[in-house]
Amino acid sequence: MIIKPKARINTSSWTDYLYIAPAVLLVTTFFISSIIYTGFLSFHNWDGFSSMTFAGFSNYILLFKDPNFRISAMNTIIWVVCSLVVSLVFPLILAIFISKSSWLTGFKNIFYFPTALSATVGGMIIVSMISKYGIPQLFAMLGFKNMMQDWLAVPYVNTFIMIFMGAWQSVGLNMLLFLSGLKNIPSSPIEAATIEGAGTYSMYRKVIFPLLKPTTTVVLLMSLVNSFKVFDSIWVMTKGGPYRSSETLALTMYQESFINNKFGLGAAVAVVLTVVIIIVSYFNLKSTFGDNYYSV
Amino acid sequence: MRVVINFILAILGITWLFPVMFTIFGSFKGKMEYNLGNFWDFPKHNLFSENMLTAFKMVDLSNSMLSSFIYAFSGAALSLIIATSAAYAISHLNIKFKMFWFMIIYSGTIFPFQIYLIPVYKEYTQLHLYDTRLGMILFYTSICVPFIMFVLRNFFIGISKEISESARIDGCSKMQVLTRIFIPMAKAPLAIVFLSQFTWCWNDLMFGLTLTKTPGIRSVMAAISLLGKSNIPLLLTGCIVVSIPTIILFLLLQKNFESGFVYTSK
Image (cartoon, rainbow over all chains, first blue to last red; front, side, top):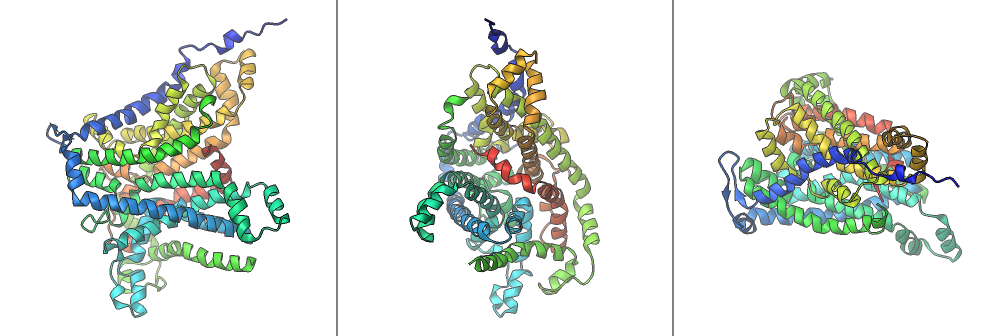
């Protein structure tokens, strides 16, 4: 009987750790230390030049009393809720339509194209389109003279405009995911349901949507987390204005730190934002790793 | 029924592409022409190249484009090497505490990027890496590592251990198993992650804006964000110019996108 030299193959040596060393080193230096440092900084006051002074919880207390923070938190919630609806419902309907159309590749590419542009570029295009001489001018020509102003300068209206602009760019990706989810649905349940006489409506409700659940979960959680982090497009469109009325938490963090030079306060905002995202991501992680835990 | 669907999609499609057409037409106009003229006017002359030259001069766009390209390319390439080795080790080598190392590296994707902004800014100013090309390359490399490692580990886990074991019996070193067997097998996910990370780095605004200040070192998105709203055609021309690399990538990879998503989910 031949004894396989398994011992030689499966021993680990210290060189194995060299494979993960650079990755761990980079991540620890840049990210892990940053997380700890931001937490630390949130309990201090620092303007960027002079030395830090300990501030205890005062930054957090200040934050919850600050009307800007409350507006920002509310805007963030609006963003998240609207993004959820927009990035689930519309891409799904689009995907269903496209899968039944005559020109699948073409429509697919048309709707995905804006996603290929950066959020900065997308934001600037929309800014140009609805600035004073763009689309508002169109309405003015039709007789609505008072519409001819900068729509992005109107508080709360501008938030919804920005959300729709975000949809223009983000719908494409989710639409693709739903398309491939739809394509991968096995045909046997659908055939069985047709034989049993299911109409279109109940076909969708009882067969197709449940089978799409894995895709829907991925899209939902991805969009949820991303909607908290939006920065580029809002910064380019309104910079959080006018008078900081369209800020979300991500922008408030930037504004307090780099514009108001209150790094401690900005760090506190970052911590609050992170805690919220972690709570939301917990469910994401649970579903991704729930079944895979023992296979590492 | 199909006709109705096609019709609806066609209308939606036109609405979708409208901003793009608007951008292209607008970039041919001049500033005065745009402000004083009608929204729906076709451009009178071809001022595209003039707009382009102004944009290049105003924010040193040519150096910015070079910088962005360096950052995106080296960020994606370096992190590819680093992350793939880590993924290989976690999936096929005998390391203790695999899950722990995995979570450390993966945690880079869980937290919002905003939380890294202030500390990295402070570290960089103290280490004199602020506003340097090296600093930006280091940063973008680190940002790309977690996601690439996640995807490649998913892929490697799917390769049965017998393949690497029989190669080792035949005398391969662990490194050779990685470079001669696993990496050729992983061409598809490697290509996809390289391109998705390149695009991410190219499109980044927040870090490019915060960690640099010299026009030539700045990343391309930060540069055009500073063009201001007064000269709209200039802005639109800038948008077109900086989008060209990512659009080219998008066109080259259309077919691979869908299969690529398989690797990014469970």
